[in-house]
Length: 410
Ligand code: TYD
Image (cartoon, rainbow, N blue to C red; front, side, top):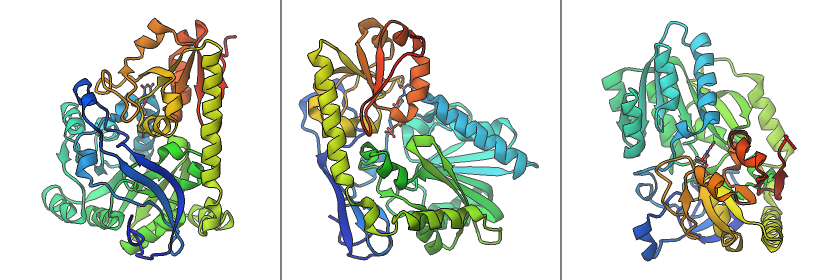
C-alpha cells in the first residue's frame, strides 16, 4: 500500500473499494501459459482527503504493463470516428495553415493518421513495440518510448516544437502525471494547445463502472484533482468538454497560460464541489453499490443458465477481465468471449481463463445470450451483430444492473 498520496504526499487516504488480489487485466494468456501460475496484485481504490485525487493503493511497475499492448485503437469505429472528428475540428480551427501535431500514447496511429491525411506533420510516442509497428506501417512516424519531461527536451531538439499535443487515455496510466504535463509544456510552442482525454471519475461512480478500475489505471480524475496536477506542472486548463467515450470522459484543453479560460472550466469545478467530489462523501457507499451490482449479475446469469440458456461474452476488454474475476461464478457460465482483435484471439482471459475467439464463433455457436463486456462500445457492437440478433440472440450489458437489448426488429 502506498505511504502517501501520489500527488500531494498527504497520508490522509481513505479506502473507497477493495477488489482483492487480481491478475493484470490485459495480460491475456496463451495456451502454453495456462500451466503456469499467474501473478496477482492488490486492487484497492483510495481517496485523498487533502487533494481529492482518487488513486490505486499499489503501483505495478509499468514495464510489466505496457511493453506489449493488446489494445489497438483502430479496432473500434467509435474511437476512429472520435479521432477523425477531433482532427477535423482542430485542423479547420487551430491548424488552418498546417502545423506539427504530436501525440503521447499514440497507439496504432489512428488519430495522427487523420492529421497526416490533412497535411499536418505528425509524430507519435508510444512505449508498446507491437502497436508502434502497426503505426509505422501505416506511415505514422512513431518513437517507441515512455514519454517524460526528459524525453520531451530531446524530441524538441530533433523535431521542433508542436502546435498541438494530444494525450488520450494515458494521463490516468502514468505514475508521475506532473512530469508528463511538464513534458507537454516543453513540447508546445508558446500559443500551442494540448488536448487530453481521460475517464471522469464522476461517471465511474454513478454508473458503478468498477470494472474500469485495474492496475493500468493508476488515477481516476475529477477536474478538481486533475487541475491540481496541471497547476503543479505550470500549465493551465483553458477548456473542458464532457464526452460519452469510455462511459463518460473529459476532454481538457491545456495551454501555457496566455489563452482565455472558457467558462466551462469554472462551471465544472463548481459542479464537482456541489456533488461533494472534493470530499470523501461522494464516494461513500460505492463499495456497497458494487456488491449489489455483482449480486444482480450473479442472479441474472444463474437464472438464464437455469432456464437452459448458453452465455457468451463480447469484447475481451480489460474491464471484462476485472468484471469476470470479481464474479468467477459468472465467468464459469461463459463458454467463450469473442473479440475482433487478432492478437487476442486464441488467448485466454487472465485469472478466469475464458477462451477468446473471433466474432464469427458467435454465429457458429449461437449462444442464447451474449454479455457485452466491452459495454463502452455496446451500441457499435449491437449494430454490427444484427445477424445474431435476427436469429434470436440476445445481448445484455452488465452494469450497474444487467440490461437486455432486445432486437429492434422484433
Ligand atoms: P477497450 O475499449 O480497450 O476496453 P478496456 O480499456 O477495458 O480494455 O476494449 C474493447 C475491446 O472490445 C477490444 O478488445 C476490441 C473489442 N471490440 C470488438 O471485439 N468488436 C467491436 O466491434 C468493438 C467496438 C470492440
